[in-house]
Amino acid sequence: MQFIDLHTHSQASDGTDSPAELVAGAAAAGLAAVALTDHDTLSGLDEAEDEARRHHIEFIRGCELSTRTEHGEMHILGLWLPRQADALEARLADVRRKRDDRNAHILEKLAALGIHISMDELLHEARGESVGRPHIAALLVKKGVVPGMDAAFREYLGSGGRAYLPKEVLEPEEAVRLMAGLGATVSLAHPCLKPLPADWLEAFVLRLKACGLSAIEAYHSEHSDADIRTCVVLAHRLGLGLSGGSDYHGRNKPRIRLGAGYGGLRVPLAILDDLKARRRAQGLPC
Image (cartoon, rainbow, N blue to C red):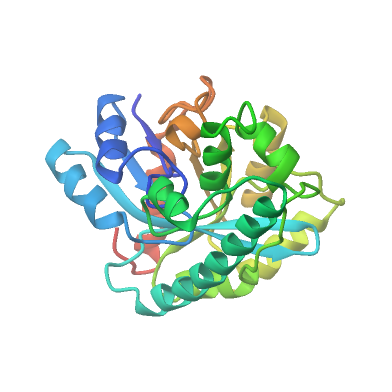
């Protein structure tokens, strides 16, 4: 049986592999297809696509957008994004500008605590277009301020941390419309990672389906068997497709391997085939 990975991150956002290294790793792992879905940027897609041609592995252009809800952040994945995505690129540039302002204020808060990180250090650490808290956390580890990434978020950067600041993100309906309007397959990412009130998830998915949501990411490194069943049942009931991926970040999430998650996750090629069939039924390219 062949397997795929439709949720991965490179240096273009908060992963540690270059886009080319990530694709080469997917090919070495024997995957039939891989999607690059960096946070709030499309900047790594061309490099990854070129590498995929060299390795004869199917590549899907993607992106992951953060959105706000009354129960915290929910993430939206876009798959099969076109090369020309001007409306999305413009909106993401605005999101990144606001994130840059937030990063500067976080560095100011850390400096007030006696922890000095320059913006040049941060940009060098990130090496990509989408710069955020994971890069600050990595520098806190390198400087010996904390023993690891978990401690960096717990003590400084996570909600309740001493240097925490909330970030401005998109509304979920806007994120779905932006990507669906470009002909992307739009999937709700890892919907079971946080406890949600009974019936809220279904109502939320119905809201987004009306905006162009077409799939639910059932298969994910941090989804339990029960979570997978919840997503599968919900998708079937609402006539949506299924998606899945490891959420690979390289060394930033060392327990997660491409196509294998924590070691048990496997997303069969049939998942991709079904998403393609749904796209063809809508007259969309694959």
